[in-house]
Image (tube, rainbow, N blue to C red; front, side):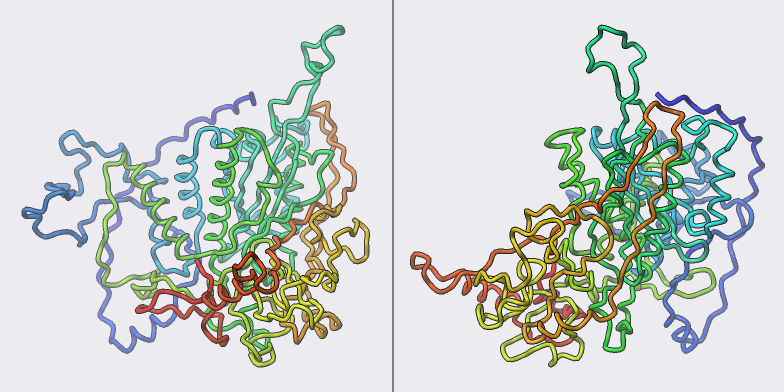
Length: 627
């Protein structure tokens, strides 16, 4: 097992200052001034204020409760309230020693307040740390034994300039010591301990956080067996290293659709450089970074004709929520896999596309619950969640509207997992065009933008040129006539110029994060030829991350030498069934008519402004295929 670091000498106990006096009540503000101030939603990262140590306390507030339980049976009640805020013991109940000065309790309390401020409030690091900590404790033991959720990567390191990052590595990793475990700082030693590493990193050096998620699968390299001698079985000559020091696969996930890939590339290069300082190298079969498909933030479908986002559609606040949601999904995925074969890594299953719907309000609600339970955990479970009435709310010196936590279903559309259009953008489900319509009729729809299935029942006339990237989305539902008009050749090879990475059985092994330039357009059939002949509008190309050569590994006989590899396998988009023709299925209706009826049931509303949910307080349902 890894040697334990020497214990640091205990710091002398600092005197605990008295709790600060409660601030004076603010003067009443005229109603007109309040309305003017509260129009601005709080969108600033929370920064702990300077000053003396904050002391937690018990404050009497107005909590929602039943005034008189009376004869109500079958209900939980609280006959006795906590008698005084200066009491830490009531009967057999004792609160944790030093809880008022416990920094983890303070951090969790801060996280809970930030999460409950508004639905579009940025998350600070404590929100993620405390949520991850609680969620990890709920995992089954076989999964917990194989998973490491790292401490958050600080923005002043991973968001700094190249020179500042290089200087940081020099300070952290003493160059006078041999490379390997011994010289690795304590905060990075957990990287060696488990095969699965989840690492949320702040990509911004200052100001508002932008959280990027790094997921790594590590392996134990073979090392010479010190007990092996001539005559022993050859298979016993090598044993697995105790440390996980070989990268089998790694993904850096940033859902921000407005980034050109430079942020992801920077984080990838810096993580690889840091791993090399730890003598953790890529293995011989490494094929570059893995592309893990996630639904995008600020998708292009929410842009107008001028390229500007619709009001409220630009998502610059959900990166923390998305990181937590992604890690939770991957841990659930790992739990399901371990339920079948504990300890077995299935790369195809592990790296498959994630869910096509991200609901920020649902994720925030989940995190609120986890952090509240984390506070219960810190308090010895002698506390309970309560609902408190709120008359006013402030973030620093700014007023916050008290009902800003209310969910909003606008701009929460459903995306097709694993899908990409000609511009490399994920495909959104939307209502199909009605008969006689085309994308020119809708000023918000461009022929090269990406939407869900069209409603063209013609199976032969337009040649199937609009076969969609997923389930023959758009155009005429693909190649029922078998003429491969969409450029998809079932027998094309790795280097075939017409290879579209979508034949399902070819030799493609591309997992690079460069969008596939041959992806299918999902424009309506009337715009397909134009879409195919004209270069994509504002194509976005992501530069592939640089490869860093491994250093000499003096910590093991395995030198970690790597060679240049082809791009990793690109996850092919799923294919849907191709519709049949007519009523010749043993007296039953044809599959094509079944699909037509299904589409009419799902999409009965005429296509118009589809970016916003039609749901309201009186009619929560939606006619789009939303969760």
